[in-house]
Amino acid sequence: KGTELGVVTNAITQMVDRFGSDPSGLVVQLSPCIRPPHYEVDFAAEIIRQCRGLGVKEIHDSGVCTACDLKRYYSYRAEKGKTGRMLALLGMR
Picture: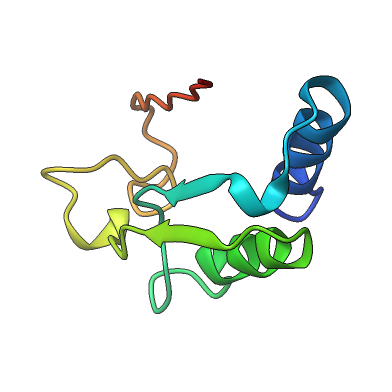
């Protein structure tokens, strides 16, 4: 839902408005997430599209599907609602 609701767009817009960030100078890193064929929506492709639409030039995609390796990654969808933990970090210079 976050991707559909524009969490990436909102975050970048807030960075521009609050800190004067230039989207062309941002570095975006896509972490592991569920991907096709395990899920019908390609979140990574949509996030990349949103970033490019705002002028982000440097985007790195891990290319890792969480549902493909449940011993290493947690996937709420693949594990049918079993809870797990994830961590994301955001930094500024």
